[in-house]
Length: 102
Image (cartoon, rainbow, N blue to C red; front, side):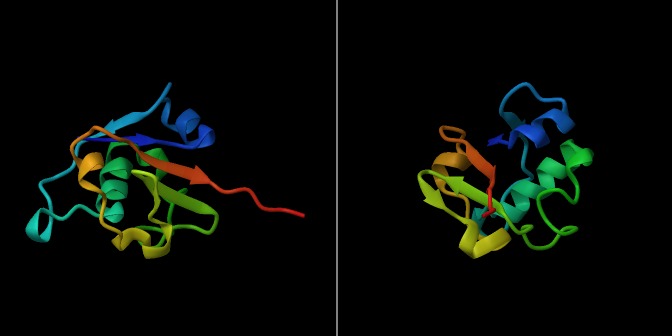
């Protein structure tokens, strides 16, 4: 089980008061868990979030950042491997809506 910390607007839509637990299917190739797999499970558990964090089931939307174990996973996108500490539930996967403007 992975714990996901959502941005406030996504938490409200999902009806969650805090971080949400997400149950993953058993890992992919070699037990590998990716950001995309976590998002698939998140959207299956909370269908209202479909399309908010990524385009369909594809890449992350602009201004969405994903962090885990003190590392920015965003550059690798949905293919980024989730650290073992997150997979084991000792640390959360954090999804952040970046702010831009001028």
